[in-house]
Image (tube, rainbow, N blue to C red):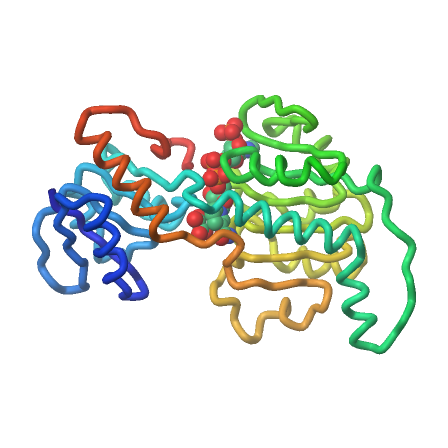
Length: 310
Ligand code: NDP
Ligand code: OXD
């Protein structure tokens, strides 16, 4: 069996070693622009260049080394619909998301962001505590990662809310779904955490209208995709105080350009798309398992629904 691998960073050796360990029968072919490559059975990619589409169109399945598949689905019909796309499910990312989001929620709840600013200014000034009952955390997206984040937050006693496309129930979480449930979900969420896939339905979901539905003095944590937020609207609402602060891991343009106004806004905390990193060994293990199951004609998890876009 032959696997076509593309790594934008060019660091293919460790991946080849891990595939040799977890799928010893596989031969790994590295994709290079402008070079002819052998016909492969499977492809393993994250955000492939357009020039790779011809090769992707000939494989039996495409495995994505991430949870989100927007960087692949953006090619639309140029990517034949009969080729299954399989994303990573958890593969070590869920616990990282739980750490990142829990840290951010606690930082705002305990006002550590404000104490950090005070300390830099040499100020000793205890602030009034927030109350948990006024600090409901609402998670947009109750999938593999969103659910893990809600589980991680549960022991702290925040009122928890979740929003998904289809109806859900989760102990200790007030669940909302669909376009009809969004308004009520937003109006009661003091901290809004975005853990949605980027699809035509979720693009720009945190625009001015929706962010204005959040209670005054709300917080935003975006660990999904930059295009979920209308960036100028967020800046306006932070400046007006309607949004107290935001922690953003993802942006419309990455790396975030040096001249972007977010860098100058102290109430925005920026991280460089690291909330949940792809762990190579766990990813290769999951992909290898799925390839073995596919070869054996068994069902696998993580198959993307092209119509839904995730
Ligand atoms: P899942 O597919 O497991 O979960 C997606 C969730 O979003 C589901 O609950 C789904 O609802 C919900 N959803 C999708 N569309 C809509 C909609 N139109 N309205 C309401 N709810 C919707 O994905 P994961 O949890 O594995 O990953 C989520 C996203 O996290 C990824 O797509 C990616 O964008 C982002 N990510 C970011 C990383 C980073 O480092 N910043 C790392 C990894 C992931 P339902 O359950 O009803 O289908
Ligand atoms: C992912 C990501 O979707 O890293 O996995 O953003």
